[in-house]
Amino acid sequence: MKSEVVQGLSNASWPVLLADGAGVIHGANPAAIRALGEAVAQPGAMLAAFWFPENNSSPVEFLARSERGPGAGTALKLKGDGGRSGNWQACVCPLPDSAQKRYLLQLLPSAEAKTSASDSSLAQKQKLDCALQLARTVSLDFNNALTSILGHTSLILSKIETGSPWRTSLVEVEKSAARAAEIANDLGTFSRPEKENRLQATGNLNQLLQRNVEMFKSAKLEKDVTWTMHFERRLYGSRFDEAKLQQALVKIMENSIDALPPRGSITLHTRNLDLTQPTQDRNAQLAAGAYVCAEITDDGCGIEPDVLPRIFEPFFTTKRGGKHRGLGLAWVYGIVTNHGGGVAVSSQPGSGTSVRVYLPADKKLVRDDVASGQDLTGNQTILMVDDEDLLLTMGETVLSSFGYKVLTANSGQKALDIISKAERPIDLVITDLVMPNMSGRELVEHVRRVSPATRVLSSSGYVRPAEEQEHTAYLQKPFTSQDLLLKVKQALA
Image 1 (cartoon, rainbow, N blue to C red):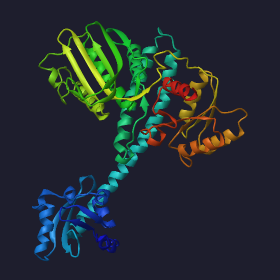
Image 2: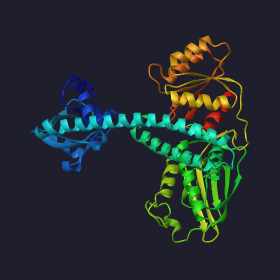
Image 3: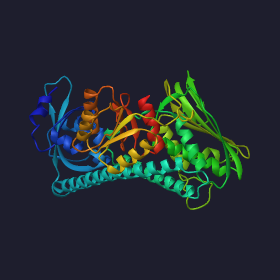
Image 4: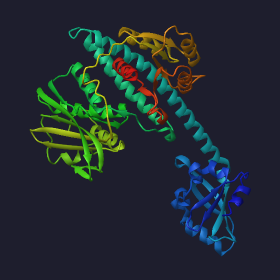
């Protein structure tokens, strides 16, 4: 209805909106989209979503006033993308000859906004865009450097004798690099536009818990901890951000260790759950469906009844010392609930604590390679492609030390040249997704055309893209040598 009116003003330099009497926006010209953001052009967009309380009337009341007769422009304050505000002189014109009343709303910059507000808003947006681009670049470079550090360190740790005097220092290097990887991941998440957020890959919770236990076993703890694991052998798969969920599980385990006496035990269980109706476990409310549950139980000091209801509150802590800010379990709660799951805690003073993490599951069984002690050696030919030479060196060192024949290329075109001239078939291509000139996705498409039998393992410091979910094996940067070897085994299987 009357959308041609807005189309006729498509070249106008001022914003123009078409709205009905209920405040639903039915049209917006390009200037309105530039001023208020893409949301203004979405179906069902409401004028109220861009309205400030300072306007002294609701959008419906404002539009209705125009029925009383034409008047001078009215001052309006409207919201744009990112919460930025704009000051306008609004002219409203009811449109006749329509089954449903429509209004043409034209927004002219107010006198003060013409010079200062628009320039300031543009400058602020340009600064933010530059900052986000810088953060993305730093995050990617940081991830590449950390992948090299983690890869070499974890390789040496897997070869060095348990009693070596250098082992403790290497473990500390690995822990520091892992902590830096968390910072790089947070920086990348901050810099990534919302539209790039994607679903995560289907992961194996058993493997993630196993790696965490091995990390704590290799660390020099002040307490003698006995670890016991009872893992579901036929575990459902669950989609999760591996780096984030690992941070949550590590925090739970750290709390369990803190609660232990000088000698204590921690037990880990995993199991599948099929809920036919909504279920509640303590404060965790679970809808009907399939879940995987990881339960971490310690025989430590337990939690007092008056403290237990407050454990997820931000900044609440019973621990002393400047490094304890009371954000640990609040952070755990946020990570798990953001995955659509829940966290439940039960405890008795003097009898220990049990933390149960529930994650929505795909009813597809995942392979339990870590728990079964898989042989990580191989003799296949692997082509590793990355524009970062540090990663090529690390990958070649790790894979060749486990028996693989490794070729390297620092660009997509060089990789295709190697494939075309190879004397023996290449069994697996490991490629970074973000490379100049020819991206990893373009390379994968070429590989599938020229060598359909070659398997592909893609890698990136960004969150796994949705189109890579089911068709290509994926390795998130930064990764350890064990992560690389496991993914290679899975991709070749």
